[in-house]
Image (cartoon, rainbow, N blue to C red):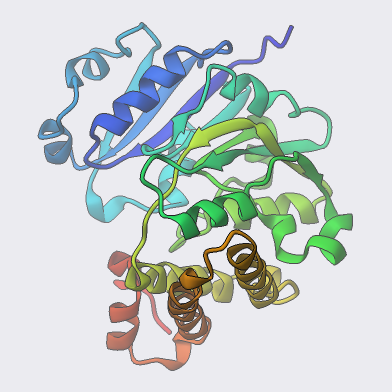
Length: 318
């Protein structure tokens, strides 16, 4: 029997009904968390949230899981730094990071997610299933990025998988805490992509990252083309800022592979009429990525227009 303790860490901003579904899903787990750490952005936003706040403010969920609620200012939030701060509040054996819009698909999420964490396997991430109302193209993207077969990834996979060797998603991911601290944790200041940056460090240090397809969360978005542009701009900025990791495994090849796979799938299922929409969406993604990789050559006003994380640029010189 696995007796290791688990803390679940969730950055929170203006939580709503989906957040409460997430908490309810954690309460039903066969392997329940020892504690849930909530890193909330802006107390005023929390106070206005349409949720049953009194439980969390009194230090537990409705079903009695201990809760640590921390409020931070919006300007203090950082994708990597905030999560790392929360990690250092934990004494658990395993750290599970989730986003507030990722809902456990069943009661076995934490059990399946953490089962492989032993020996050199230092991280594991869950499969993401599309939520109700997810657009057709996004459903296929979910299945492309999060397939039905689990896989253990090591440094030897770089020649085969390329950049996907480093893939890991803090939408729902678990880390061995002792190794996390030994490795230095997440980047303290990062625009995006703190999970892949950390996973790359694990791989380069000889550890393994496991994709656990049986650990499932419901999570998807119907982003517009412009939203995809902003996200991919910031993604490329993070890669440019960590050229020592990503220059050797460029994303473009994987992006082209996904587009070609999607085209084939659309033709195969009789939905070729969606190909123009795919090209439109992919074009905006690539434009964002192209500009983000070259952000140092752009005027700061243009960078601010392209980025979805304006705060990141306040004290950044380039």
